[in-house]
Amino acid sequence: MSLEANKSTVVNGKAVLGIELGSTRIKAVLVNEQNQPIASGSHEWENQLVNNIWTYSEEAIWAGIQDSYRDMVRDVKEKYGVPVKKLAAIGFSAMMHGYMPFNADGELLVPFRTWRNTMTEKASEELTDLFQYHIPQRWSIAHLYQAMLNQEPHVKDITFMTTLEGYVHWKLTGEKVLGVGEGSGMFPIDMEIKNYDRTCLEAFDKLAAPYGFPWKLEEILPKVLLAGEEAGRLTEEGAKLLDTTGELEAGIPFCPPEGDAGTGMVATNSIAKRTGNVSAGTSVFSMVVLEKPLSKVYPEIDLVTTPTGNLVAMVHCNNCTSDLNAWVNLFKEFAEAMGMKVDMNQLFGTLYHKAMEGDADCGGLLAYNYFSGEHITGFEEGRPMFVRTPESKFNLANFMRVNLFTSLGALKTGMDILLKEEGVKLDKILGHGGLFKTKGVGQNLLAGAIDTPVSVMETAGEGGAWGIAVLASYLVNKEEGESLEDYLNNKVFAGQEGEEVQPDERDVRGFDEFMVRYKEGLAIERAAVEHLK
Image (tube, rainbow, N blue to C red; front, side, top):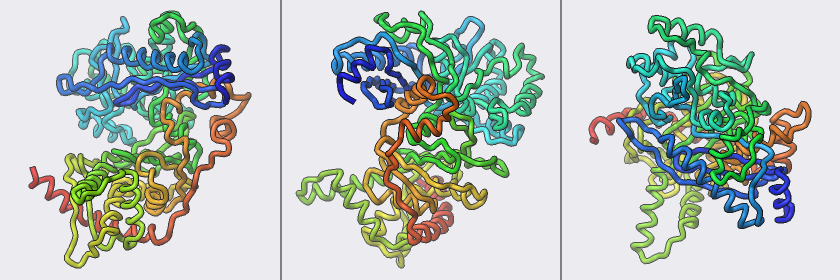
């Protein structure tokens, strides 16, 4: 749209704002009625390790939100010469899960415990056993139960507990709510009622009864809402908290706050059943929308939901491209030592394309990209390594191919459970992230790894702040009875099919052969962890 049209959208209060609090950046994105970004702002921040707990202070949260909002307003003024006074809708998103408990006076009882903390192992195991439902360590309920097991004195004073975006939303609107996608990372969701699982609630209250707390679990959890439901409006106090200049008017409707997993699904148009997305960068994870529940509990697979309440299987791996990037940098050093000037895009492209010339199974080579531990294969620590036998076909093509294969090795372990053991049906997967930047390589190899068509779209790079802005836009711009799937297909992604590649039989076969070697060789990785200190 033209500058004039976007200016008019801002002046008439038709623009929609999405803000996402990521691990290292808070980003604000303003979109027009066509869901196109028209202005943005950001704020860099870092978590702190305080008393061995990864956290962000309340002061840092609000300073960051205010700064990213101010930066977005500055962008609007520079582009269109107008202030931001009215908005059609607002949405907040943040890094998933974690723990923020409050007392009756609205005071935070302990510093925010983020998803990075791995101190809830006992609670995670006991609750998984109790509920017969996998409860990852980062989930809010695991943090609460661990605090109970540790006999932390604050637990008796809790009147409300929530996640980061639920906290921000509450302070701006007065409403104690969460989108169902993020709610599903606090506590198991019953797919029939699209609300907290009653059997699990009762089981937890029975477990907590001997402690004698004055609360029942349901009383302290946020209310769960679906995409498209109004989740409150900006209060006078909230408007002053968000916009310290006082220019922003109160009364703006909010969509339900969602986690970054949910906004990622929206940003990649993968919320319909039999679809999913893979995000591949420093870490890699897949989100697969299921048609029915899994037959049993798998520690490798987390169960969450889409913002509309459909069941999603999540395979989350800690390691993806770090080791691959380290090898590419080694080739850069070599080229520079030979007096060549190196263009990194060209270097990545050349080496990645070389991998496509290698043997289907990487010529018998083996590599592990474990910079850190990998829970899917049972490692608390990692050691990056490359191994071959005297008979392996050791050449550049196979070397690059094995390092690309292993970047998806842990992911394939989890995806094989879904696709081969559980028989989950997938029509397509959408890939986004750094692994897919070189055309015709990462996308093709992922298709081979999971034997499923893979698409890559331009908008996949817009990210979660845009995803939550789209959810806020859906709240106010949807037509009567229009589902989120239809809204995304017809109003947001229309004509953006992306480039799809079908799995190549050679890659599928080669990946399966490689995975036999990968699983056999885990004993070598274990020895490296134990003996290389």
